[in-house]
Image (cartoon, rainbow, N blue to C red; front, side, top):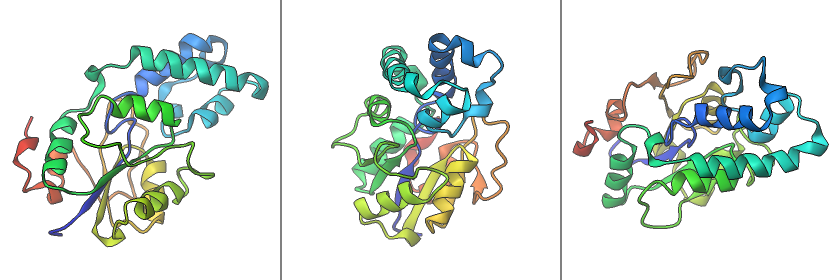
Length: 212
C-alpha cells in the first residue's frame, strides 16, 4: 500500500496511561476499586468504568470531573509510548493523513495529545463525540468521514480487543495490535497482526526515524 492513512487509539497506544487511569480511579473511588484489577477496565469508557465498579449514577458526574482534573495533573511526557513522537513527526513531514479515536472524554484526549508536537489541531473523535463508542464502529466511521479517508487505504493501531472490533466493523483492513503491560487479558484474534514496536508495521517501512 503506497498511500495510506493512520488512525491511532490514544490510551495504551499514544500514551501508556492505563495504570495511571487506574491509580487515579483508586485514589478517588477507593471503596469501589478494592476488588478490581486494572486489566478488567481496559478499553471501557469512563462512564462504562464507573458503572462497572458500581459508582451510583448521581455521583458519577462529580467524580468524573475530579478524575479528569487529577489525571491531567499527573500526566507527563514520561507516559508517551516508544517511537510515537518520531512517528507523528514523520507523518506530518510526509503529509500523511492521521487522526485519533478514543473512548475517553475529550478533555482527557486533548491532555494526552498535548504531549505531542502537532502542527495543527488534532483530528479527534472522543467518547464525547459519538452516541455509541467502541466496540461499535461509530468512532472509526466518524473519523473516516472527518478526514475523508479511503477506508481501503487506512490502518489502525489499537491495544484492546474492543477497539480492534470497532475498527474491523468499520471495514478497515489493517488493524495492528500493540500490547503493553496491562493488556495480558487481550486476545487480539481479529488483529491483522501483533506488533512489538511501531517499526514492525509494514506501511511504515519507508519511515527511517522509528528505530528506538
